[in-house]
Image (cartoon, rainbow, N blue to C red):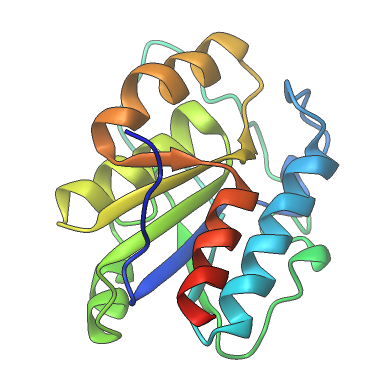
Length: 187
């Protein structure tokens, strides 16, 4: 299904664009992903729509077969990228799981603002972005995924999420598609 509409009360969720992730070998140049996420944030702010900036400060406590990809976290790890131009009215969520809804009050904050749809962007496509999109869908939000505003260090995870999972959770589009829909409804 092609991206056809945005609800009047749509929020943008930008996942894990923080200083600690800058050195990772993502499959797409991170500066391009950040530029697209910033364009979305500015478009949402210009229309007084909520912008959610999510950072990750740890991992869930359960046992796994694979060790965490992130070892000891360096100073400044959770600091959001300055390019995101954080505004005082942005919602900031610190998570310790893959998704931004689990163990946070994000759902409550969005529903208090009558949000019915979320646009999700950020890193990593197959973990933080996908988990956040799944959780949003499960909480009853309409979900849109900005494909050019996300990336992953694992090309196979990015490909699987964007082609197999995301179309089942909502609609996909580009930053330009989303901004055009925002422009059309304010024209």
